[in-house]
Image (tube, rainbow, N blue to C red; front, side, top):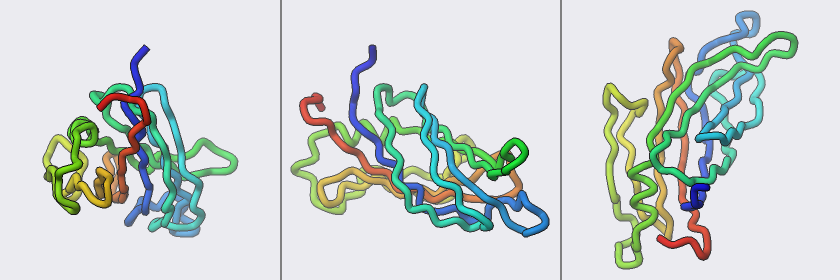
Length: 166
C-alpha cells in the first residue's frame, strides 16, 4: 500500500469559452471530472453556460506524485450520454516536491517555480508555484484538448497531514 503524502485541494474556478454542445440554446451544461489514479471527483453541473463559474473545491489524496491529474469536461444531458467537452492534464511532481520541503525560512510571496506553456503540456499561460500565507499554491489555466475551444482555470493548494513526514 502506498503511503499518503498529503492532500491536493483543487479549486475549480471557472471555464472560459467552452464548446457549445446544445445548439438550440447556444450553450452547454458543463461539469468537471478530476481523476488521479483510482480517485474520481466531480464538480456540480452549471446549466446553460459556456463560461461557467464553479468556485468549488475538490480534494485528491496524493500517494504517488508521478501520476498526472487528468481532467475531463462534460455536457450534462438528461436523456442521452453526456457529451465530452474536452480534456486536459497536469503534472503534480514539482508542486508536491516543493510542498514537502521545509519552507519556514522562505519569505512570504516567493515564487518557487514557474511552469511555462509548451507543446507537451496543457498550460495556456505561465503558472507560478508560490509560497504565500504559509501555503504552497498554484494558479493554473489549462487549454482543453480534443475540442475546438475552451480553457479551465484552477487554483491548487497543498494540505500537509499531521504525522506524515515531509
